[in-house]
Structures are given as C-alpha cells and as structure tokens.
Length: 157
Image 1 (cartoon, helix red, strand yellow):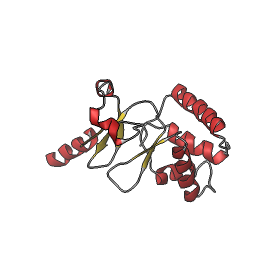
Image 2 (cartoon, rainbow, N blue to C red):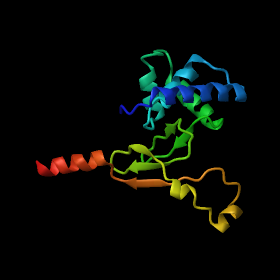
Image 3 (cartoon, rainbow, N blue to C red):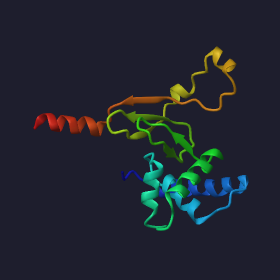
C-alpha cells in the first residue's frame, strides 16, 4: 500500500502526538515516535505486523512485541484508534477526526469515509439508556474498486 498523507497533515499529527504524550505522561521514546510516525503517515490502516515490517528499516532491532505494546498503549491513551476488519488482524488508525470506514470483503482493505449527513443524525432515544456512549461510527462493507477491476480483467481473459 502506498497511500501517503500530505506532509502538512503528517506534521500536524506529529505535533498532536508530542502534545498528547506530554499531557498523558508518556515518555517520548524513539520506538514510540517511529511507530506513530509510520501509522500517521499513511491513509491505509496497517496491522501490527505491517507497522513492524515497515519500521524495521529505520529501527532494525525493534521487536514485534514492542510494536504490539506500543500500539496498545497509544490506543489505551486515545492517541490512535483500533479498527476491526474482516481478518483476524486488528488495524490501527492515527486519524482521530470523525470518519467511518469502508472494508473490502475480498481483500480486507480499509478506507476512510467522511459522512457528514450520518454524523448529524441524533442517536435513537433508547441508546442513552445503554450506557455512556463515547463514539459512534459506521462500517460499510463491499468489494473495493481494485478488486472489482481485477475480477473484470480475469473474466475478460
């Protein structure tokens, strides 16, 4: 996957990360910074294994366990979000702005969807009785354009 974030957006996410770590008393280690930078620099939603593989060129001695623990810590502190996809691997997202996800049922790619009309719909009356709701989002499932084009190309052969 090569979907990259604009450098100004990445700079903004890195400033947020630095401030969030300071506010939460999290030490800014080189590993945490590189793990967050990798996650924040992309528009796709990588798994722990994806992040580990990509940062090993910059931090050859970083362990998979360190990546797992770091992503779990950042999620616990509200610095990143965990995204459940169709496969068994959790995906992570550094985009904390309000958005939803499209998940391809064929390749499991996860893409952001901005849906202001849905965001403005009030919760149903009964939802307040369920408990303290901190986040509402929609997940759209289907087959992505790449998979559709691949299927069409294969059918034409």
